[in-house]
Length: 151
Length: 151
Image 1 (spheres, rainbow over the protein chains, first blue to last red):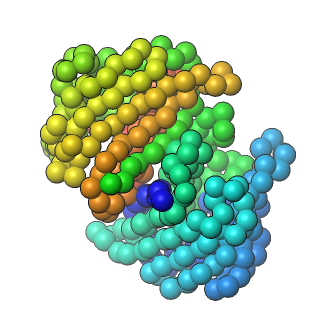
Image 2: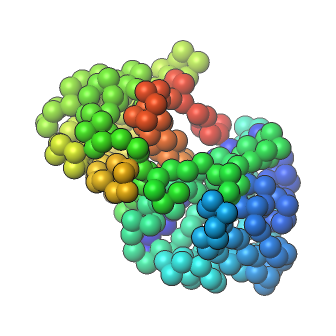
Image 3: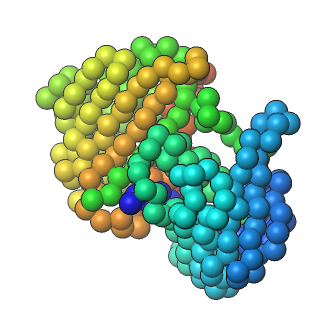
């Protein structure tokens, strides 16, 4: 098993970061504009991506845990086969005036090339989350920064 | 053991990317301006970072492998204790008109919080490498994008 790890600090309250991770508007503001569903424990949120107006798929996340200002946990229930069954956790804490986000996309079966890509892309989206919360403007898909031929 | 993985694609020849990874000028153009040493097998390259004009340490990398346009391998011989003994590999290949960089910072003893930070920061520096090669301008330290209270 292999994990993708990241850490960013956001100049904001924990509450603002938590909202960006747990509301449709928040998620649509930094990850993908095409976000559907409610963020409640046991519910499923659907994230879809497009490229030049063309649907290129996405992810369905079951919400396993919602602890306000502390932790969010998702399980991937639909999407690319490498993602299904993996979990994504968000741990929040305050430090030096920053809301620290500890991110983990865990339990990849193999460290495949696609995992390398997703690791870099998660960093890009975490910077988009930071920007959304700090400035009000993120860079969600389809406006996300492209990193390679795999977008 | 845990690894940091990344993948970016750069619109350039493999040779240009290889040069950015194996010359003092190249490395100083995307990672840190304070880069010293020659990139030759068995040699040590020194990377130092500063923050507000203050030295905040850095890394000494022993070059283990140099395969033009294919692979570069470093071993960390000095730096933060979590880094010492870890290896950093760069695999290059051409795909769809991009030079693909497969990056691995391998053999971390534990997935500590600092590893989360370094993973995100590597993504930032890989985007700096991409920018340097594609546009002639990277964002090496001390001009690097800050991601948190840990810089």
